[in-house]
Length: 137
Image (cartoon, rainbow, N blue to C red; front, side):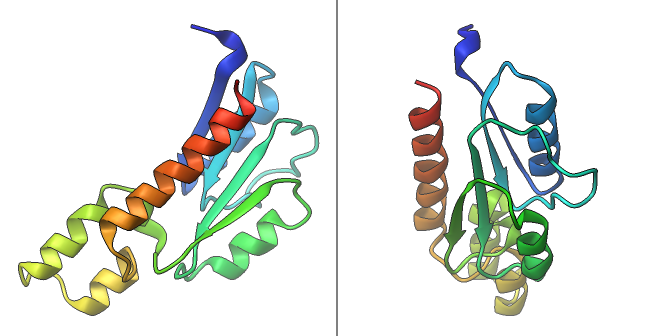
């Protein structure tokens, strides 16, 4: 393992955990937070690693996300036509369940948004991959 190239990422509570773990572990070279609140613990004083703050445009908690990220030096990305669970396997599963008649359009939108799951997944992979490639090389 190349200890100069350690990156952490997480979604939701995992994103919160990744950021706080990076703050406390100098071996971490970069951290990506996919829609995790950062107001659950003391202020993030001492976080010096590059930070990706990635959120969707459909999440009900957007105001709290933005408030909890205020003042943090990080690269912010907004994922269009998506909702909170689009960062997970639900992003590809829920649209298929909708096509099969097992999930309503309203439920799909509330879970993963209206975007094409292949496009959404590709965008997440591209943005997170580019971020780590830039900061961990």
